[in-house]
Length: 381
Ligand code: PMP
Image 1 (cartoon, helix red, strand yellow):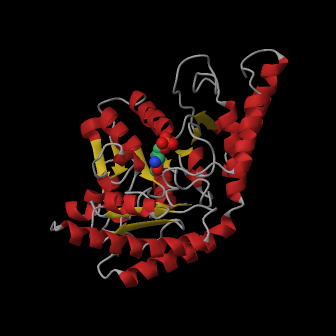
Image 2: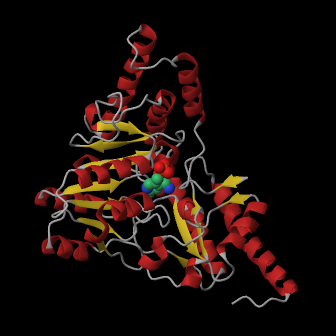
């Protein structure tokens, strides 16, 4: 079975599992307890905070551990909402944000949101952004670093700089960036978020980094009074290890990029009207979002699954709701095109053989689907 759904979640690395189990077995004390068992866990959490801070080039106290990016994104937006006067608050977000930004913004800011458009490749329109900024300074700008469905890398370095110059809070949802791409410059954002399970860590743990104290959950004063609740030490420790290994994975990116390109070239040759979304703009080394010429994406996913290849229809979060994500509308795809989107996303463990096999599996799946269609006698529009 070859796994190509890494943007939804990655398999925990063996070293990560070992550290998670080790932490659960040996360091299960409550880090807030005054005895040695607890103090040792507290010291280990501090070590994790220091190492993670170091690798992201931020101060340890700027790192707040959370249950993942959904919580982190909610934390930042709700904090802005609660700390600005309702009359003056307005936010600028892109039309292709993850629901954990989009829906949170709609909840807290409703009609004071202004949307920054993207082009048909799913790349932020930087001129439109600058125009919107000039019209009225917002309380917050939020931009996804790399899009989870298209893999298109957004100009967040540029946006961070512009916001910095104008004194505007810039939050970056770096969930698909951290652990997969060079994090240089992320410390120029006012805040950013990430989740460990996107880069070989375990689920239910992540963090946000903020250059100002952001109070999130009231309770026992953990996380420097930022987020109450007993810390998930095994998850935090596993994230420390995952980030350490992911930083060693830079060389794998070049290989994956080459293999992905051959995969796309081979499919473009096979299927005349195939579209690779975001083809001409910079994309992450691991992601291909394909708009296939025929058949709905669930048929493709289930056929490829049977052939031994796990792919996805797009974002796992929107699949749960059985409705297309906001991306399709934002990049101008028709309803029929959005039903034909299949996402393929690799990770460092993916081999060249997996990529070659996947290209062949797409071709086999097409022939099987065609045959089934002919045999059923149903005309598919
Ligand atoms: N932002 C982006 C860009 C994501 O891809 C995801 C996960 N699909 C999230 C936020 C939410 O992460 P989590 O489910 O780990 O909270």
